[in-house]
Image 1 (cartoon, one colour):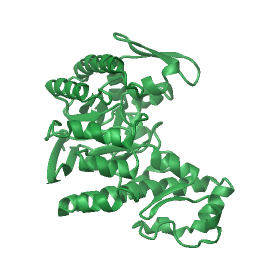
Image 2 (spheres, rainbow, N blue to C red):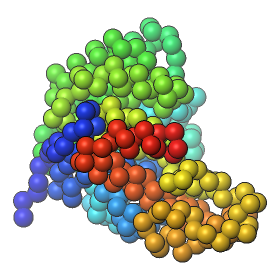
Image 3 (cartoon, rainbow, N blue to C red):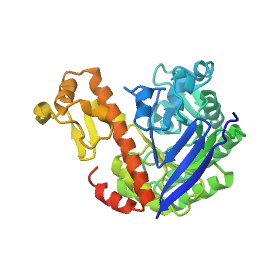
Length: 370
């Protein structure tokens, strides 16, 4: 059977909120979609088969970390990430651009050479150019690739953001050329420009000229307020290409997602569900719960009575409190999976309400509750 080319279709709109379908040869992805983060070829504390049971249809992995360990050659030698981690879901790989910012003490930026890293593991030097980032992602055999960009730290310095945005555009052109023609894969451009409307629009307009398969917003979730983030989305939402998926990188909380969907965003990823799960914080339809709180020592009710995944409701708050307070590994496993499941239930409810034309009511009910 011939492999399907990458494609995207908008199926229903409710103002700017929209339901769509991303088509890949590994399976279709309903949007709005949340991608669990599998940084190092694993979604922390969760098995892939359990991730699939939550309704997850795509995961994200990290180019920078996999480049350092175990190295792209080791993964490529067995056919790519899917074979390496026994995952038949589509995989999106980021480009390493975020690490240019988050690990800035260990790197420097060169316009031609890209990011020059000293590994945070052993100090070994790496060069991550736009061409090398694409080569690594193709070696990982991911289904959606991201261009190499510079993700600047949160600042109101216009000239700093302008210079960074222009560098990202230069790298975008090089990334597109290095990607070549791969119709079964997709390459997304990344819109930069900080909190400045004119820079965001310039970045978007130049990326549209390069004709990417999707458009992501980078440089957010780096310390700005939610209000500031939503303003960036409001500034750009009417200009995003209607026929392409819109991806907000590294976001976020349930309320972030609700507000961003309202502004036309189709795809999300964030480490929050698993990171919170490892520290005892649960997301539920009734709000957030710190399961380590002493008041749950006598609470034999399920973590979330409204959770549709009944296998996760076998465990009481009392028991989960005990697991966390005795540092049992099962605690992280159960709560991480619960949180991913909650996020997927949220995305399913979002899609249902968009299809019913009731998304605004759903948004208003939960925006301050979750």
